[in-house]
Image 1 (cartoon, one colour):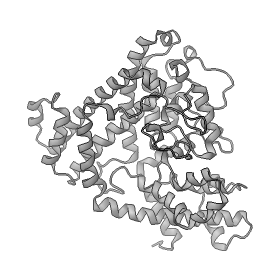
Image 2: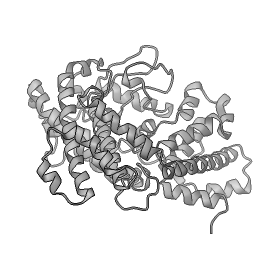
Image 3: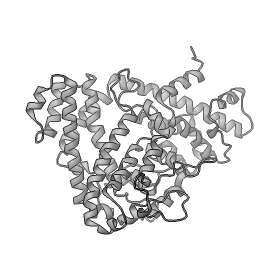
Image 4: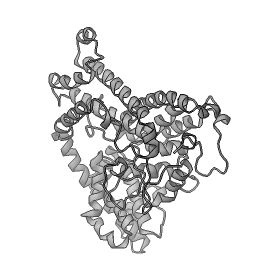
Length: 445
């Protein structure tokens, strides 16, 4: 892979190349990407989607929206710092007009979208959709779909759904948000389809990155960017190099900031937690300043800022040391898996799993989320299919009045009809999903 091609400013539908030197320096194409995402309805819904604690009644716990914004801030710094060195190594990029801010803008835009495809109720929402089609009422569709279409459903993937949201055309709106291909490439953490499932040690095989409904859009992006094909038998590619920085930004934020939330909520004892945080920042901490902070939130905030800085330095150094392998597709791990603080990171994650992600409050609301999502899928998929078959019940007709117009398209293809409903359910917020479920189950008081 080569950087000039990987930094493509092309957008869906373009018939001519967009040269970097022709860009308006006051608002670059990569900046336009970020702006379009921020103003999108899909991004706004993240303000009421679970990050750590579902439907928390406190005002400082992170939502998917605040988490995504913080990831973008870290991602921008990673991109700029890496970009500054890459321009020294590849002076041809400077001659073409690229600056280190371009790298920061691409990574920031891809980072702010990294959770845009996540359903309500966190990662349990993805599993709930998959379970509905694997063991619930949706299992009856297995024999009516191709293997890959059915795999898309039973392994419903937020990353693939995010790519759908960013690229899906609808009447009057071509190419979704029409982001630059460089940003879309950096967004694609797992540039492969759902089948075949061939687990390997390479991180790109951990999950998949697009549904069958967006296969052509995916192929257009990877071809334009010159991303390397991993398999000749399947649609599987090595990552766009900047996807490693997007992943690192997310890893840094959820590792440190979820931990911070757990401390502030009282789920993790401060003294116990600080022991783990200080291991990360022992070389940069100002003990006098730390001990001058009288409030727990200030002490934790100080350590969090130092820890993020340490991990940013690590991620940048590892990326630059391994640039050639990353471009060749042979770098198999995430950046933080190669860092000097991997053991400390793993310790923090283990504590977070035990004390936060498996806390009673979280588990109870995830259990409720399973039932809510399954019921919503069942009602809407049934109504849409019965209507297409010409035998809708009165209830089906009423239900479809609750479905936004853009999801009522009469698709001949069963897979597309099911994906319409999955797309709708995945985009609504936690609170709206609960309200909708109450309406559909008659609990409107």
